[in-house]
Image 1 (cartoon, chains in turn yellow, cyan):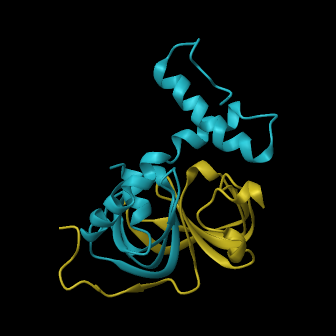
Image 2 (cartoon, helix red, strand yellow):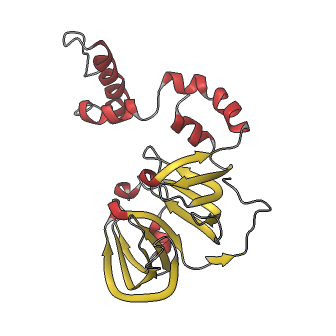
Image 3 (cartoon, rainbow over the protein chains, first blue to last red):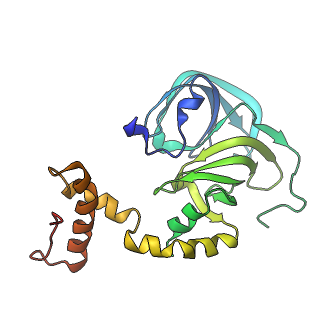
Length: 99
Length: 135
């Protein structure tokens, strides 16, 4: 318990739930979280990578690639969010932010 | 005013986080740590080009991928209130040093005193005045 105190988000509540993970370099993976450690190394089961547009690596496409059981190295993990409740939406800003 | 003090004060406030890859995340800050890892709730993610949007209930963002954060103006007033408190015991630095020096004594003494002693020694730089044990 004390070893995991350092994370600001307790990943325990995501175990056996679907999570979406963005990795440095732009890959995006989703799968069922089976385990993790304090370095944010993740074990994902039935992982699926969202392939990106060859011309524009920023855009993810609908194409996927099945990866199976994987370990995501913590240093490469940029973002973790639950799959459940995550959805693409229309522009929620009257005027796009960050302009 | 330390950047991380401001960020810690901004807990519970809405904020915008832009990552190095250009994606932005708007959400309420739940928690953050000394690595600037952050936990946001009720998040709206915007793609780099600003034409796609995702809603997610929460997300964890690794600190080293952050380019910058925008925090509400009112947070800066609150951070001033905390200033006196943080003067007495600056966050992060003191605690970090404390772990090394403060061994072998009572459980209460070890972390707190060791930390302060270590900091003093570092600032003066004199080995004779080091006082690293916090006595």
